[in-house]
Image (cartoon, rainbow, N blue to C red; front, top):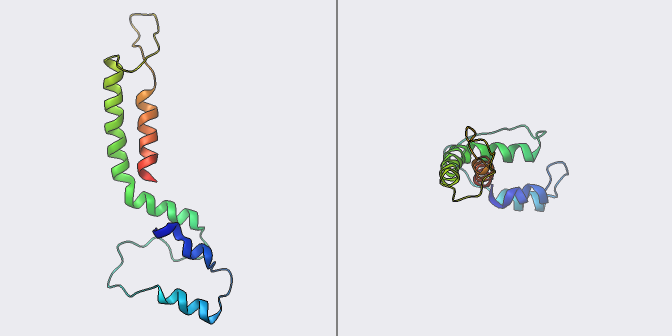
Length: 113
């Protein structure tokens, strides 16, 4: 995910590289003993899909936990009337505003990406 794949954008694998460009690109690589994870070896897959898969693989659990915490906090602040709510006028209906839904969703996607 370094530089959002800028090296692959600059040196599109759909075009042929000169021997000098290929040697320079190969010089940036290094041998590893193991892979942390492997997404796809298919060069026909879109780069965007691979990057999204990496983000989900790396950040999904943290994004879920943090967005749940944010939603709980916003729910508590709404119930304590610290945040503005929409009054229904009926005493049997809980006054609300979608703070938890909006804040939880935004924090999920902010952390995920």
